[in-house]
Length: 171
Image 1 (cartoon, rainbow, N blue to C red):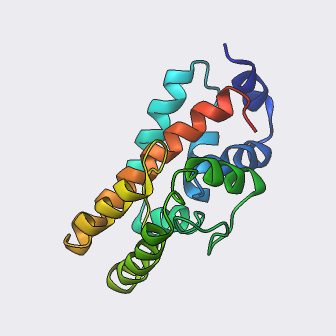
Image 2: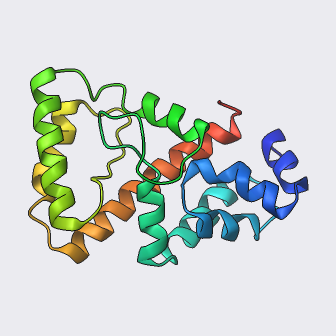
């Protein structure tokens, strides 16, 4: 068994919630995952995470979305942790590759927020600013229900990446 999981399984519920929260940003998700302990295998944690995530309400999803800064920014609108800020910066490392794309991204994000009422959420790991801008443009054409599912899927991908980092002990 993974040493991080062993330690997490032994924590109090509140400590376990606090420990896992930076991986997603939704307290309901963290509470649900902590409530399913003990978790012995990494794959089991990832599967349980997905199952809990897809069972959450739109309100819980929006809480997770608010824990992220906008692409190209450092601070989130909602509650976040130093660990989540650090991971976001690393995940967005390619976002500032061109100044003009950064400006277009900022404009696009403002339009997205006006249309959908939340930040544009994308799993930025491994994507250039140009790729994220193209995704933003494509997703602007979605209806609200479709876009909510897209945003939730992007958050799920981010959560999976962060859970893997957490289980490897990355800080």
